[in-house]
Structures are given as structure tokens and as C-alpha cells.
Image 1 (tube, one colour):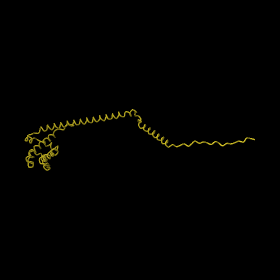
Image 2: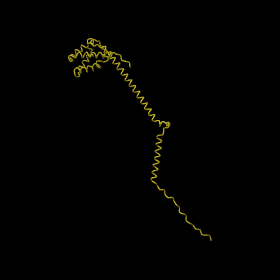
Image 3: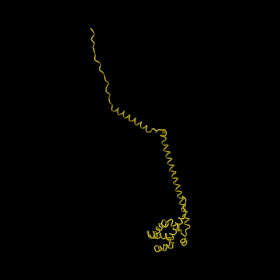
Image 4: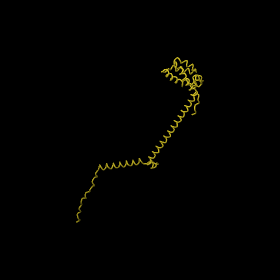
Length: 207
């Protein structure tokens, strides 16, 4: 007889234990990845642009110094131009003062000679000297003599000048108002009138 076969059951299969999920380790891993990304981004930010030498990054302070020097140079040049303009203006003032002095020297100090001095009435009319120069002067002087503005009297005396009245005629018109001050007023006014007419006759300086 054949020997009887014995069948044994297979050994049990041992499965590996399920992985343990470590929350703290996972968070630490994510934090490390985030830090790595941030470092990479920072490195890219400071990376020089294509075509720009790396040395330019380290020479930034020198570039700033150069810009500041250029700024100071431009400022100095501007100040020099301003100074030059002020010198030119000062020269113009001196020239104007010399011209005014030469004109004043032509005006007689004696009353009779002053009143007899020939006035170029055409120049007075051409440059509207009665309105532009004499009216403001007359207004100020009447305030000094009378203590208040006198628009009507200012208009009247200005009109007398426009009509080419001589100083004696003007004095006869204002004596009733200015009384003893009338002669002094007319003398001063006539000197001013002569000055403005003579000044208008001086050729303008070339610009």
C-alpha cells in the first residue's frame, strides 16, 4: 500500500505594521521646504540682471557717490549763473544811476532858467509821460501838501501838462489851493517833468 500524504496548512503571512503619521515631523518638513523656497527667491532677487556685471552690485555705493558729486556740480554751476546774473543786474543799476546823474546835471537849479528850459513836448506825448510818470508823482505830492488824496486836482494838473502849459500858467492855476506852497510844488514838478522827458530821449541800451 502507498504511504498516506499529510497536508499541512501554509504559515500565516506577517504584514508590516501600518505607518505612523507624525504630525510634528510633517509640519517641520513643510517649514523646511518653505524656508528653502524663500531663500531661493531671495537669491534670485539679488541676482544681477542679464548683461549687468556682478561688480555693479558691490559698486552701488560708488555710483551713489558719483551721482551726488554730479548733483553738487550742477548746483554749483546754477549758483554761478545766478551770481553772474546778479552782477549783470548790478551793472545795469550802476549804468542807470550814471545815466540819471548825467540827466540831473542838465536840469537847471535856478528857477528862472528851469522855467525857461525848452521841453520836447513831442517826446512827452509820444511816451505818454503825463499819464505814466507825472500823474502818480502829482498824486503823491498833493497828499504830502494837503494831507489827503485829491483826484480832481490830480486830473486837472495832469491835463495842464498834456496841454503843454508852461510852469507859470500851472502855478497860477494851483496857487488858490496850494497857496504859498504853489511855487515850490511847480518847481519840483517841473524838474521831475524835465527829468522824465530827457530820460525818454536817451537811446535804449542794446540788449
